[in-house]
Length: 428
View 1 (cartoon, helix red, strand yellow):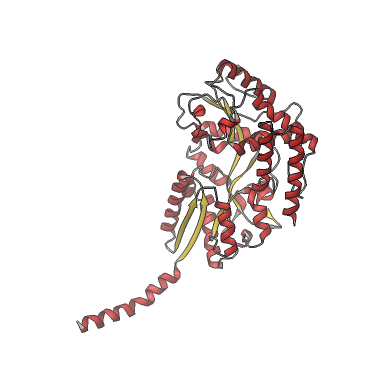
View 2 (cartoon, one colour):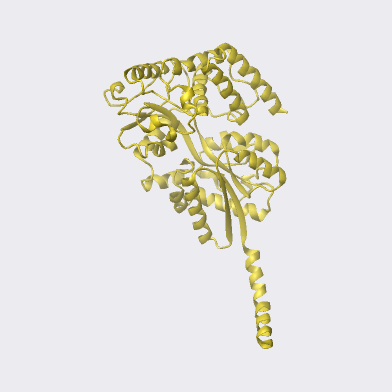
């Protein structure tokens, strides 16, 4: 027994340096994101492949629902416990960048080559104070997805619904609902009414974004009043499902009217199309541009990064360098692209998009939606326009108009005052 023990100890001593070298050569990274099960499944498969290709790298996945993600990230950054790299929303970039403790400059990594990302997207959304602070994992654009079966009486000779005005949109909705009291032209979740209806209408009136990057408003009280008046017609005409009914649903997939083919047309981001109609095979579907006001100089449609990724400024150089390698691989490697598909929107990388096209991984309707959206791009989203606190002010006053708690004029004044106050706080 004594001899065996001695031999065992010798073996351990001989193997220990090798074991320690292995441990020291392994880099463990933490990557956080939000999203549903399908996004998590695809991302985990990509991580598994990357770890197989790079045995010295271990990536710990931290994923959750969108709700609470930002607050958790802020807390982690403040406590010095944030992940090595993390997913961020476009509306958070300006605020996180202003902190000074969140983003590493991605220009500083040899592994990262942003050449596959359109320069306009980089300039508008990714570069802050001369630094490349985020990269877009995907991009998205707004379109109208419509049920051709339900709206058969309103299609043109080509079987399409094109060149919609808001007035025509409401007329179709009123007629549809009169013929079938269970049917409505449109519906959206709470925030969707701001982003897909109120915001485009306001931009079409002002020919400007609602909140500018210099912390000022891009509209007058009178213009906001007009926008509220136009927006409310979507409900008073009978085009939209009553707000009190629809507001209880957090997605189209939970709305029985949508699932039963009783909603004619919904505005949405094109990457969501396949998921929203995947199980609705009894209906024919089409896509078109958002409705436009007569004489408007902009479409009010968005084409913007859907999700973005950043590297934590405060982790070690080794952690940052390895995170940069994975990000570049995730954005452009053909095998990674095929695994991730459109789980984070249509790939922002032109090389990745080409991979999906070559492998027939984009449906015909999504391909058409991309073309429509890209051909009618409105303004870029402002740095603070998508901020959660700004959005909450819009939602609160929009709901007062919908429920007749406040007139359009009163709500417009309240909105303007509240935004001005919040922007002053953010500017400090």
